[in-house]
Amino acid sequence: MHVVSNPPLTPTPMPGVEHATLAGSAQGLTGLSLWSQTLAPGAETPLHRHDCDEVVLCLAGRGEVMLPGRRMFFGANQALCLPRDVMHQIVNNGSEPLRLLAAFGASPVGVYLPDGAAVALPWPT
Image (cartoon, rainbow, N blue to C red):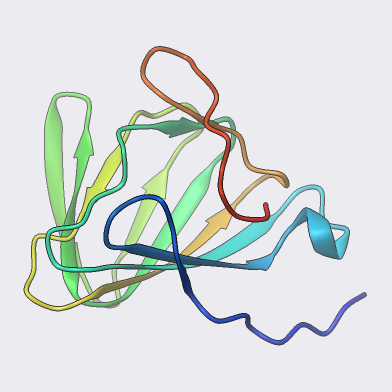
């Protein structure tokens, strides 16, 4: 068991995306990871998928999630439920920072591009 202080969000190689891993394999977890991210206005994640289920809670701002064949808009106090292997991209289409809390059903979290290439994440998983 661990009591963990939330680390500060830090910039990532993705323009406009800040990240902090709140809990994951570094705390001995194998079936759960928790991430905090902020996307600046206009920022986006790459199109990707995970090898586990993901739930993203929007804490503030508004955005859209691009899915195969459709896109959905969301805002504060709404959650995105993304089943395992669903290709998706999150975009901040608002004028304020998009603050997200993401829970994953695995630790570490596998991230894959559309061509199947694994993404080496620049943060602890």
